[in-house]
Image (cartoon, rainbow, N blue to C red):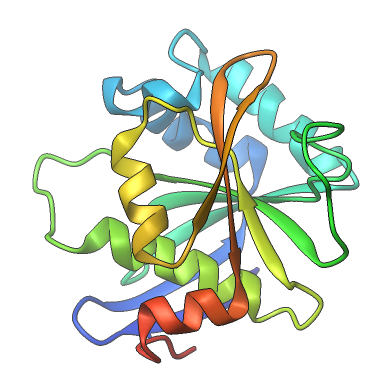
Amino acid sequence: MTVFHRVDERLGAFALRTLDAEADAALLHGWVTHPKAVFWMMQDADVAGVTDEYRRIAAHPHHDAYLGLWRGTPAFLAERYDPAHVELVGLYDAAPGDVGMHFLCAPTDTPVPGFTRAVITTVMAWLFADPAVRRVVVEPDVRNTAVHALNAAVGFTVVGPIRKPEKEALLSVCTRDQFRTATRGDVRP
C-alpha cells in the first residue's frame, strides 16, 4: 500500500509503500549486502536473515519499514521508528514528537546526480507530513561522512557522538522549520 508520494522537480515521482518482508526480501538482500551498504551492518546476511529482520521490524509496535519507489521502480528503503522505544533508548533526551529515521538507496551502476538527496528529501517530507512529528532524529555511524553531508543539506544539526552497542554514532536532529529552511520550500507532496 502506498503511504506517501512526492514529485521532485528534477527527478520526477517518488513514493513509499509498506514493505512486505517475504515478497521484498530477495530484492533487499542485494541492497543491504552490497559493499556500499556497509553502514547498514547486514553484509553477511542471507535472504532468510533479511526476511527475519524485516518480519521483526513489521511485528514491532515502534518500528516500521517502507520500500521507496522512483518512477514506479523500487529504488530505496526507509525505516521509521520511535527513538524513545527503539535504537536510542536511554542515549539521548527524547522529546514528544521525535521520530527516528534510516534510509538506504539501492546500489546502481548508473548513478543519477542528485538522486540520494531527492530520496532523503522525500523521506523527510513523508515524516513531516505527519503533524505529530516535531523533530527527526538520526544516528548514523560517525565514519559515514557522505550521509552526514546529506543530513546537513536537509537541515539536520549535529548534537554529538553517542556510543551504541554496534557503533559510534553521530546523533543529529532536524525540526520541521530547519527542514523547510534547508529545502527552501522546494518540497511538495
